[in-house]
Length: 261
Ligand SMILES: NC(=O)c1ccc[n+]([C@@H]2O[C@H](COP(=O)([O-])OP(=O)(O)OC[C@H]3O[C@@H](n4cnc5c(N)ncnc54)[C@H](O)[C@@H]3O)[C@@H](O)[C@H]2O)c1
Image 1 (tube, rainbow, N blue to C red):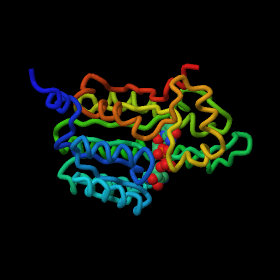
Image 2 (tube, rainbow, N blue to C red):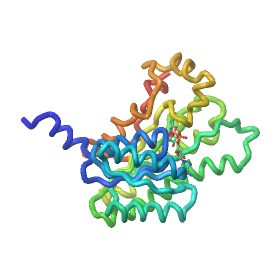
Image 3 (cartoon, rainbow, N blue to C red):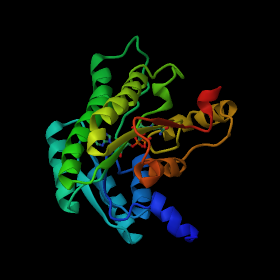
Image 4 (cartoon, helix red, strand yellow):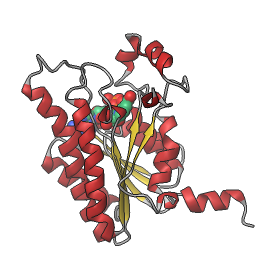
């Protein structure tokens, strides 16, 4: 028998892999960037907020990992084209993409301006498409397949609450995009999966928690856990590593059972 850590490293280890994370400057993107680096990947932390990306890249390097910070706006095609190509050239190729950047403004449909609806789609859906398109080019050039992880949401599967009328449909689109991209890129050995978290405490959701979301959540969620970015890490790494080699087009709900009730 091999020892346990060697066995687990073979399944979940990301040594030698080159990863790009969008919106990696805080919240879930930050947590996933740190986790990928801990699992052995070199990580390009991208964000529209350059300072956030720089802080996360520095935290990875301080912990002994390899990381580079890059300013990249997923709403702008030219920025994505430049950013993904720059990341691949910095790392000598690309094997992993995490499409994390997203917005979730709470707004009722009746008085929603079309610009707000468009902006949500522009980042959550079109941004996911643009980053995927560019990353796949870089992965093909790297020659060894690849793995993509999209951030969907429980809101893409259920109505949940008023105010998610732009966000929910955008994440449903991410779930379907994951399936279409999985079919299209399978011949290249590129797997495309998604995770659909329930509410996770981040800088972005902090205002909602301040408004009593935590108590509401615990009343309706079987596991009674306020999720953190770290709670997403295990499944994310499984999907991006050898452990997930037979999985593509899937969306994994990670929500303490919230959608069950
Ligand atoms: N937090 C949750 O409860 C939750 C639940 C389900 C899904 N999600 C999804 O997870 C992802 C991250 O959520 P979070 O709570 O960590 O968000 P957050 O608001 O805390 O962080 C988002 C990050 O994305 C960056 N960003 C914003 N616009 C960008 C752009 N145009 N280009 C590049 N980067 C941009 C921000 O600067 C920020 O660093 C989102 O896609 C969100 O929809 C979050």
